[in-house]
Length: 94
Image (cartoon, rainbow, N blue to C red; front, top):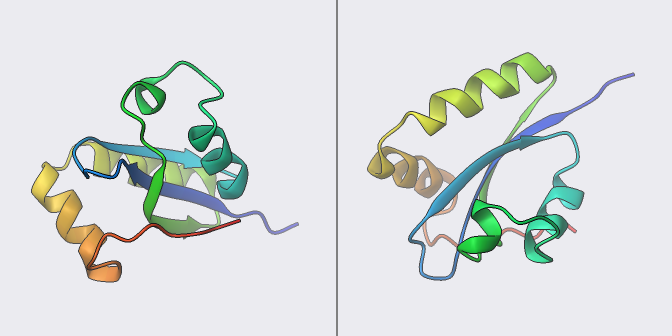
């Protein structure tokens, strides 16, 4: 069985706060963010706009990457996003 894991970045319409997470079901996780399923950082700041994601075959690789990105400066994160999404448009994964 070949599973995929995702490291993703979401923000809000003003692109102020940035949230980085890891999941095995990107569609479900983005749905949860959009519908504020849990009281969390993302629901507090209305972070529902998916702007970037990476795919991994192993959960340990995804978690390592998530931790790496969380330690980056904000400008580095924005530059990474802009390499594949220069206008910071919302990515639809439904």
